[in-house]
Amino acid sequence: MSPVSAVEHTEDPEPAEPVPAGLLHVPVRSGPAGCTARFFRTPLGGRTAVGFTSAARLAATLGSEQASIRLSEPVLRALAAPLGVTALTVDPSLSAPAADRTAATERERENSWRRWHPQHIGALRVTGAAAVVACLNLLIG
Image 1 (spheres, helix red, strand yellow):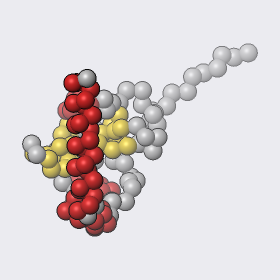
Image 2 (cartoon, rainbow, N blue to C red):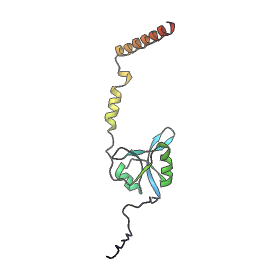
Image 3 (tube, rainbow, N blue to C red):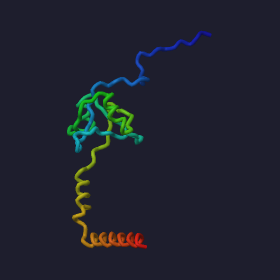
Image 4 (spheres, one colour):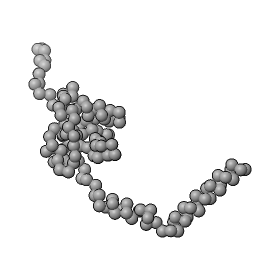
């Protein structure tokens, strides 16, 4: 029997070592201290950092209004590591649709404390006063 010869492949569909992606367009959101990188969920629920190789790919996936900054892959990984995010997804093609902000704003307005009935606020005051009296009874004996 002849020995089986190994076939060498020049292109590996799944490289063993991750290849640096260069500068990535990283989606950000504004926060109190400036901009903050956005982290996403994988289909299985794990957290992942996301980067895009071009602004056009970012806009096609997340919309043209999405703000971004340019970071290298090692910097993005270093930024995500303290938060426990170890996965990095480059150029994801699918994303969930954006949340309907108008419905959320309407719900928030309906549930605002300013719209509470005065009897509800009075009930909270009475309940709070009863809790204080109960605590004082425990302390005094």
